[in-house]
Image (cartoon, rainbow, N blue to C red; front, side, top):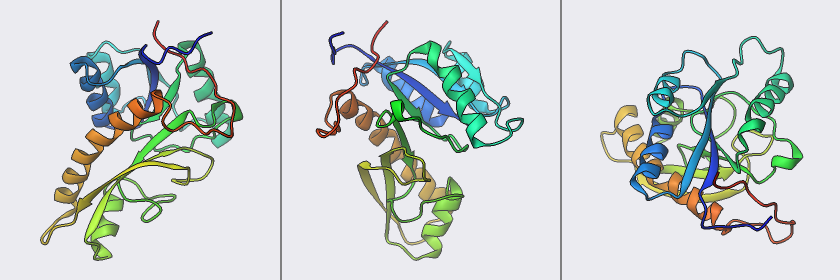
Length: 214
């Protein structure tokens, strides 16, 4: 099967909360600035506001509730089983707060965005406002966001792209979070475009044809 890099990359967008990142990606796709198609939105919580956003945008939605699953392994199997029929080429974590184990066949095809400059202020329990609060408490003068490949450790995979954001005098968690999210809104679509174009390919590994179009 030829790899047509001009065709839209099929995305699976995984959420747990409000879906702002999902909305940003959907808006970029509709505006024609991101050549992609959201093949499915998967939520780890049935009550996530992002589910409402997805349905309002007429996007396919599946829910794999983390709470009844006995462990990470069972939950991860359920997620991959739910995604498989939708044929995504790239899995995009967008405020997905449940640990997801990455099977070998998906290595290099799952990305995440983190609201800090990794490797600082990452790891288990470091998400959302907790990150910005830690940045402010540490007296940092620069924060930002990081897009990285996902592996089987928290916030650990290969860094693909970073965008610095100044920490200003008088910043609160809310003001810093707002400024970092503005950077995320530019960085994530850029990273997806560059991933789809093959800019992040690992030359030491055989390239897998990504699902596109359709």
